[in-house]
Length: 430
Image (cartoon, rainbow, N blue to C red):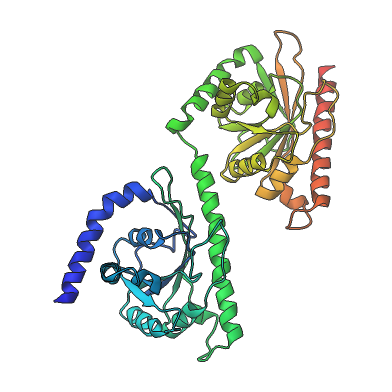
């Protein structure tokens, strides 16, 4: 009778709190592999997660809505009064007495997994501070090996506030017996498996950041991009004045219809260059790396430029914040325009390029699209644009890691390609 009452109390509480948690957590769930991963888990499983805050477990309860989730909890939770201890037991808490080295929780965990229940463990044993990760305690490895239950790794960014959205990544199930069949695994075997799971959760963190970037710079109509889309429409109508003409000098005749993320690199000979490029790539939302002098001292202009997709970069310092923002843009499948000379050049004189464009392409693993913006034939003439061949950065680089030699090589190839397009433009102008 007692178990039945606890069961009734738990599910009534979970259903009642559902609208509140939906407003508070505003969960966004990603999957390592959506085809093989689901929140509807069949049979028992061991869920291993990083530990960002005290709200991790309440949030996880609603990640798996059709299951009662059990959790290993430290003795500190139970030492705050009988009421809290009783409530903790009702919601699925299992006491772990770390001070007295009581391993009774392992037997309880094995019993739950045999009954095909879900058990979540935070192997760090304490809350992460300032994104600092702690070593994983390996007791969960022994539980997984003895029970044969799969481990489901998850990662959460721990943003539990009304103004923020909580992001969670659910990884593919891992069966430790596929990696270790020994009845009595050695300390080295356990530590190796422990590091494997820890590395897996760290890799889910990268998936989480990529998912957030894709959501932030999503395609399709969204109200937050209304001003930007109106700006694109206005720029397109200005093509009556610019009369932009694109000359495709690449091998592929559909180069203009770029799919996926990429870095567009062009010479910079006029203040009107961004508007010309908006006309060239009117099918896509493009973002433009813009110098700090255009933003500073003009708050209203700065706000409008941000809405139109300009990314402020401070050329006086190594502006890593701007680089990270650009990387998020291209990783999410969008295009970023870079003028690598860093200032306005005269027609027929392209200064040496800085390495920012090559750096972005190498870090995000996206191609570079070279362009040359030529001068108008007359005040009412056309604005010619020469589009070069796509530069596959991955085929050029010699090492997976970022290095100075590859960076210089790609920058040099890019510079030569722009000068080549410039020569073609000047020749055709004659």
